[in-house]
Image (cartoon, rainbow, N blue to C red; front, top):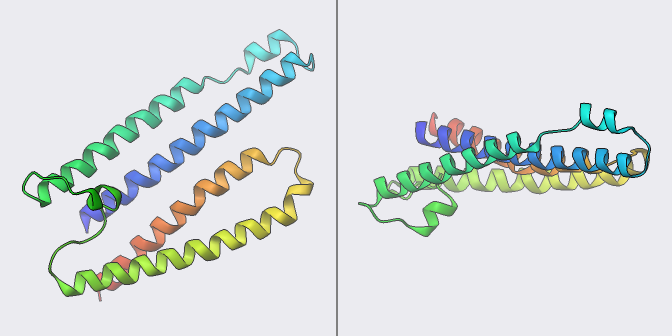
Length: 165
């Protein structure tokens, strides 16, 4: 259970950091466009300039930690060999325990169902709200980043509830 918790938290942090990098780059581009169109002064541009390298550095660090942890788990389970299916889905329990395999299957089904429903809700929301937003791009970045986070949290909660039964 601890391994599952760590891998879920690492993936969620990675998704959030990626969304922040994209959001900050969008904001920096908007500020640059305003400066180039003479809507703001150079002093205002320099005062409000966004340093996107900090967010990029955080993203790279989290990517490295995530990759190392996934490879570490895969090597630990398989006598030093790395299996591709564990790199893609490290939360899978590949043991011969039937109960854990059933719990993993039910959790994956629940997560997939919630992602499908959440995607439909997000698309309907954007269809209704986008005409009223001045700049929908930052909102769409965080909303799209929220979909895998919702799926991972659903998987984790379902797995934990079924495992503790």
